[in-house]
Image (cartoon, rainbow, N blue to C red; front, top):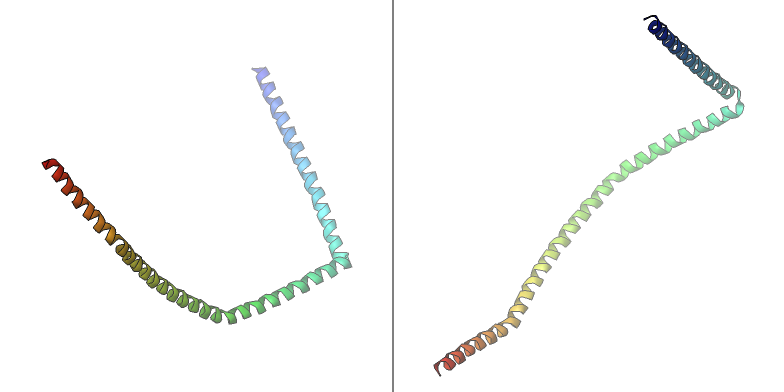
Length: 143
C-alpha cells in the first residue's frame, strides 16, 4: 500500500511540475509577443513616415466615400430610364412572341394542306390498287 501511495504522489508531482513549466513557457511567449507589439506601436506613433502614410490612406478613403456617394446618386437617377427600357423590351418581346406564334400556326396549317394535297392521290392510288387486288383475288378463287 505504501508503494502505491509513493507512486501516486510521484505522478502527481510530475503532473504539477509539467503544468507549472507549461504555464511558465506560455507566459514567456505571450510576454515576448506583447513586448514586440508594444515596440511596433511605439514606432508607429513616433514615425513621421507612418503618420504621412496614414494621412494618405485617410484622404484616399474620404475620396472613395465621395465617389461612392456620387455613383449611388447617378445610379438612382438612371434607374427610371432602366425601368422604362426594361418595360419596352418586355413589350417588344411579347409582340415578337405573338407574331412568331401566329407564323408557326400558319406554317403548320400550310404544311398540313400540302401534305393533304400530296397524300390524297397516294391514298386514292392505294385504295384503287387494294380494290383491284381484291377483285383479282376473288376472280382467281372462282376459277
